Length: 272
Image: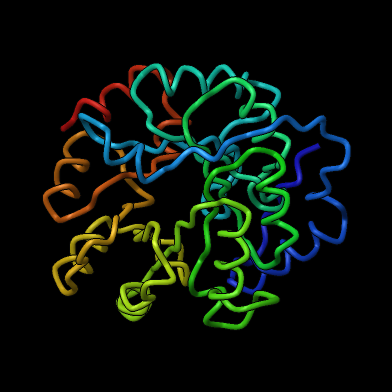
């Protein structure tokens, strides 16, 4: 049965859902038959891409639109394989069970079939989730900066980043506003991975891809690798965001809603 439920959305509800999922055992991994996994670099995959570095996303639901597709209606493992054969340089997998209908099991099953980096897309508030990411074969994890700024995680961004690095994971730290992005650029030498700019306003869930352009125009990204996220639908938008200074593109909904996922990924990949 789907765990998606329509509810008033706010950041605290996102964090509370993660704590609830942890308590209910959603990140327990003792039942998995683990195989050894050498971490695959998302950064290297971006740098080595000859066209548009697309990180495609396996997602079934979101707080903004509800159910995108039912898990029982698709073969998500085959979809991941097809995404890669069409040009995707990495796969993002939603693992938050509430509001997103995700599961760490999806990463575990996909990991055994693909050889590109996998991003665990979740609302991470605890090292329990980082442990799970490592054990099921993720290579990179998402940290939402505003979750830490509002003290909704059990530890600081710095401490959880250090913990993730010890597990061999890369980090995509996500900013949604000018202040958050400026702070991300100041993370210093101890932070060495990816910065995401989410084009979605988490206060009202509205999307504006001009967000990426505005932040990169105001702040020098330096040597940081910038991933533009949310609301990207076509090749023209990829070219626009690339010109604005984005290095890679995380795309989920428009791909999962497409009637021909392979053609859609190929179109986006060949846009540059």
